[in-house]
Image (cartoon, rainbow, N blue to C red; front, side):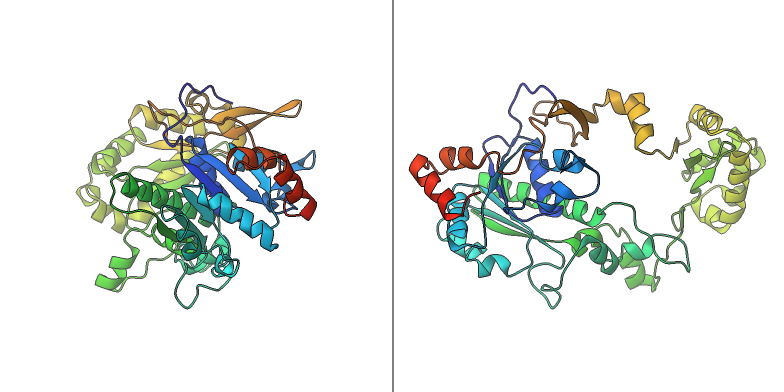
Length: 401
């Protein structure tokens, strides 16, 4: 964990996190990292992330990162009393985050209009697969499916092969970033008296759709459907991944006109550096196969460290393909503070820092993901001002676990 001399830019903002898995919780993780107070409502069995992927001592290691800086309170939302308790908490919060299927919160009496009556300033953030409206809104919307319909997945992989996905739930993470943007814009609108509370409607497929750069105008204006292009980017040459003599891969981005010239000189191909047909990107696109063949041949004849050193000296963008072990061993990652060490029982675990870096009000991990229900009583006492008798009654009724 890092020392923090200030409470963070979002200090004083209270967030109620509902829902499970990745998109909603990661949104709250980012806000909590920068100082917001996060109250995470979990079902009696806990958030599923607690049991996913690599589990150690009955808890997923992922949980310590995703659950950081959060207060865990266990409430049974299937009971009327539990939903009433959540409504009380929502009345004391600035932001609510939920990622249930559209309509679930309304059925529970916890929809935006239900809560607006008692907390008109609430920023009600909704994350779903397809958004809150439209013919697909009620469809199940996991990240993998939404990445496909968004147009993003189509562009990944090689022509005439099945589209590939990165080994990550990128749709959830990108949706979380959009939710954070929506929340911060809504908080700014409140600060400047341009709005009170409002609904932030984030759809996973739309968040991925936002990444498509020029795909839409290229189709609309020229009828071009951009295709998958393997390790390259269509219409920008050269930018590709090459295998070196030692079997390792490097990425070379030599697509600027002056950069391309320096690249060709560095690999001993002054003829190509001075070829007028390759002087600009339009010409290089025509001769892409020839350029890639030359670069692939040069890289395959040298160890990756030599390739990188040679091109860096020529001021050509180049770099290795890292796995997580490589990142841990890289001095730049360490110097930038991208790994934070947190205590877990008698052991320690490294979790990733959350960026961006702020010079005056930086974020920090104050504690790792808590035990299930660790803060139930503290939240009820401090936020709702419940006394011992009220808490005991909630426990006895089964609403509070």
